[in-house]
Amino acid sequence: MAKNMTLLWCTFSAPCLPVMISPYHFVLAGYEQGYIQTLLDFDKEEHKYKIVMDLNPRGELPTFKHWNYIVNESYGACMYLESQFRSQETPGGQVEQALMCQCMFEGRTFYEKLSKVVFYEY
Image (cartoon, rainbow, N blue to C red; front, side, top):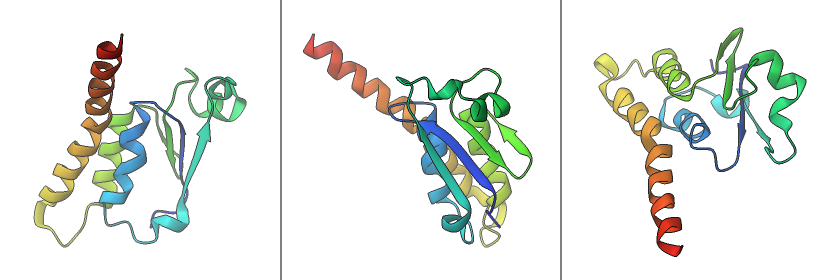
């Protein structure tokens, strides 16, 4: 079901974090086999490589692709994953929706805490 899913991401990116962790909260039959995550390095400007620019002309990460659908915003990718792979066992998918919202704000919370530590150290 989750075959042909690709995520282009980079380390220490708040927008990338929610899309990286959200598939693990959903019931994705066999997502381990079909979910490809590619780590790119901002320092080497790999986000400007042709593979990224073909999927996202802005050259920004994350870039998420499932079959022919491309979503370049992290919240949009999380919502897409939740709507596509919501468990049929839970009526209305309330649990999946809550987990998706948690994933969406995970990166923001992490960077808020990190900025407080950096500010305190200076």
